[in-house]
Length: 469
Image 1 (cartoon, rainbow, N blue to C red):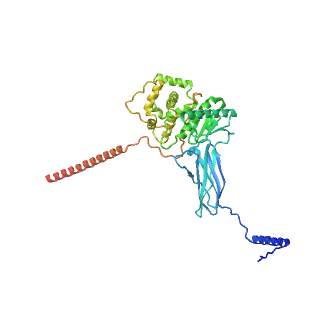
Image 2: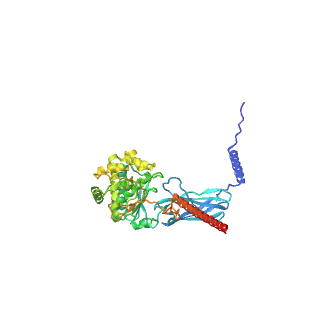
Image 3: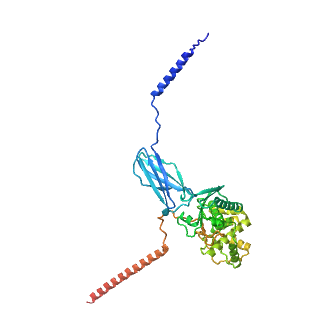
């Protein structure tokens, strides 16, 4: 059976297509047009205002579909910490669907972050419906805008400067790379993150950029931020080469050993820093040789804490620390030095770390080192040497600079202008207070007992007198 096939002529097919298109357009046009939804919750004009180095103001316009009930600013700096650290501020604002919030971080009250640090912030707010919203996290570099900063880089190193030709900056960058190569080869130290070096034109410019710095500051290392700041003029290039290698070492050591469990003794930290420079200059070597000959060396235990602020003793502290570190590296190799730093990071004491890696404690190290440099044996003490507590130490280097050119190791900056009250310098132990209280009670008891005896005697005498009469 044949199937019937209906065919339309071309004009009829064209007319059918036209009717279909018109019908489709008619149906679509009768449907309501979609409306693009615009979120009522948004943060605009979200920008920081820097008053470097004194303050940083965060401000933003916050909008919501219903009245805003709470606004919290969350902020912080990108730095090594023992845990997640989020600071919170509660700015004043007017309740409404749209409000402007602002809060100022007063660096002179809380303590400043170093120039070049990255600061982040975000806004967390709730509206009358109970919904909570968080704005996009933003960042800003904490740095002055009065200098025309330029940057050169090589691998993980970024050198920022504004005074002097590019040849000057490249020279300092090459010195930093030389220090990195030496430390990697001899001590197993290498950068884990990019390191930023900020070179100010002189120490006065650098001091204007930081707060709470010692008056003799020539450069500073901030290992937790991977930042170095130094004041170097083009005329002090030789000084700058040594300083940049020294402070760069502090960043590497501090980053590798960062821990909330232990610390690195000063002789090891500063000795490695001088080692990173390339060693001692002739004057420092002569001073160390003289101390060896006259048996005026400092004990290694005493070098675990703060160095003396007397220049001669300070320079000897650095020279001796370098010699001790060089002895460990050249005698036992860089793998053991790296293992020593790792053990300290993991919370081991310096004595335990030395024993586990080298087979001797601090006194054993001193004995071995003294023998290696031809010094007299260590004097035995009748009393055990207490483990000193590490303190802030000024870094009296580089040796190639002028005697007054001093750079410090990083120090703690106060986190709040309102700190916990310091304990009294004279505090009575609980046992003393208890003894005083007991003595007072005894005196009072004796006084009452004596008064009672006196009353009884008086009454007895009156009774005898009455009977006699």
